[in-house]
Structures are given as C-alpha cells and as structure tokens.
Length: 71
Image: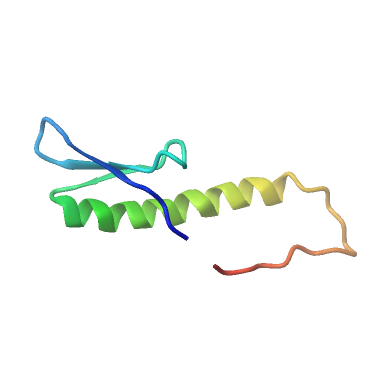
C-alpha cells in the first residue's frame, strides 16, 4: 500500500510525520529518515488496531470465520 506522509519540522528540532488518510496516525524522529521509519511502524499499528476494532464488532458465527489476507 502507498500512503502520503506530511513532514513538518517541530520547534524542538524533531521532524513530525503525519498520514492524512489515517486520522491520528502521527509519529516523529530526530531527522527525516527516522521520522519516516517511525511512521511506517505507526501505519502498521494503526491498521492493525482498526482491523481489531472491526473484528470485535462482527457478530459471532461459528460457521464462518474471518480469513486473514496479507497485503
């Protein structure tokens, strides 16, 4: 998957990374490379958390189990 990331220099010198398509998905780093490495981890965690919320809201059905698909 591809996401657009906004980078902004914070007043304290850190670089803040934000993914507009994923509300609340924000990270930071001491430089641009670290911020981008960290936002990749944040994107993974954000998507996992959203998936867990969706799974927990499904009605329980023993005849039909969700299938996991990696992308």
